[in-house]
Length: 374
Image (cartoon, rainbow, N blue to C red; front, top):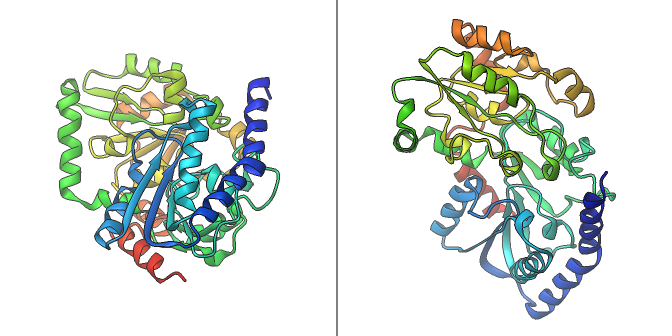
């Protein structure tokens, strides 16, 4: 571990154990009662409001709640700016009836929250692919205690199969993890949304019109602050070798974009699924979202044996409705030949098992479940 990372983790530890709890206690003293109509949406990794929470936010507004969004990219903020952002968050956190997240959020887990406040983790991924949370040491390595996620009152997941996995990864009772679906995926069932995605893409990328589109969307290795991408040189080679009827769109994970800056489009990954003819990825959870399109996928994972031993998976790669390749030459052969189709029965079985509650009605189920929580 380098010195800079040690310093960051030391600062996080001080904030989690001392500063943030003190700020919360002060905020609670200033607001002795929960504001029953206040809903807070918080995120620490995006400047803009995350797509993962937009539909729930809109639904809560329709239900008559006062909605506050509190999103910052803390990786780009200095210590003073971060502190001010967290101080402002604690003022709302002390009063909110509901707090919605879609990722880890240090201020939420750093205090023992009020009983009247309910924290709902929407998470940012469907299914359960590579290990995370307490199942993966690198994921929450700066936290030594075993109660980091105890403030979560609800974790919404994409299928019944995921409940045990998420409960173990977050060290939560299983009853707090419910198969309600992933709100973001409701958009994929909207004809108008899919039309918007196509129009937006071809307006920005007219050179792709009339071509077959290969979307390369890999995840990163190591941790978010030291994101590493595997396969960049191989994909550059592939782009030179593919016939002219193909158009490649390289779309890196947001954490890796900051380090590499290699993405070919500013359009969010989930808005590229509609235009892609085939997805090439590795260990990214985009396989679950993309599976809802029914389109073919290829897993290009040169390091899959090493990665599997180091990080670990919740499923066998052969369960995925995708062809697995480790060499760029084999990837080229599959793409050119079109030999990447998977039997429809195998594909549908995967969707039924891992995405059963992603049916276009997840947002409504999540909101209704929250309204029933005591």
